[in-house]
Amino acid sequence: MARPSPGPLFPAAALLLVAVLAAPIAAVLLAMSPHDALAGFGDSARDALRVSAIASVGATAVATLLGVPAGYFLSRTSLALRGPALFLLALPLAFPPVASGLMLINFFGTRAPVGAWLAAHGLGVPDSMLGVSVAEFFVGGSFVAIAATAAFGALDPIVEDAARTLGASEWRIFARVSLPNAAGNVAAGVAFAWLRAIGEYGATSIIAFHPTSLPVALYVTLSASGVRAALALCYGFVVLVAIVVAAAWVLRRRVVF
Image (cartoon, rainbow, N blue to C red; front, top):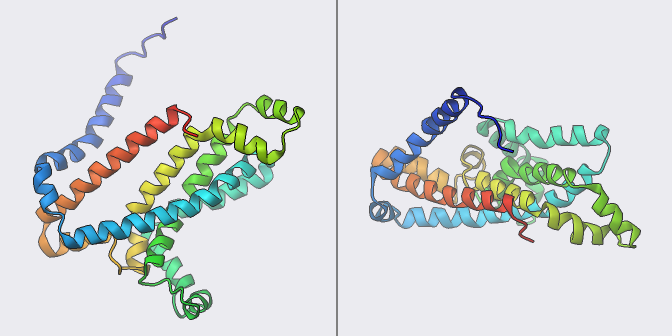
């Protein structure tokens, strides 16, 4: 049976929202041709893209390795534990970027106990590739655990109970039943965690201005060369983000594992 029409107000609101948000993005794509945007991606921008790619993949990999099992555990534990845990996981997502950077430099700086110990063992965080990855993990790592908690929590427990009655171990149930059924939403959470990581500027610029990541390079280019030059990097960001968001949308609708 067809759903009743919601009336003209709701589609008008949806159309206006999409138009307001999409117009500035479209303006970037219309400001220059793909050839001009590619020409504006000089050696420094490509180096920055390499830094962002390596650091964001590392940060997202750690977030996935920790966040997926954490989300599975939280989805099956009591609300008294799950609520405070999700509250703490959500905090880094809400901090202003500069505040996040200050927290990280206070913890990982060479004068801080933890940072000094890491530096003494060859793992200095400030102004290093590790520092870029740490900043990106801090601001975006919670996405995976939060998405996984919701994805596993939405599964029908009858399927898992049936597997238990057949003698399957908890690990086998997780790997062969729960994870495949939640894979679409978990993978989308991983994709959005990566997007948050590769777009991180504020915390990264404080703890690891060098090596230069792509968002930092975007700000430097804007300051040194003006809007036109910076738009070439912005153009690349729009294309990259559009591809990943489209992939995340597809993953949410399909089981990928």
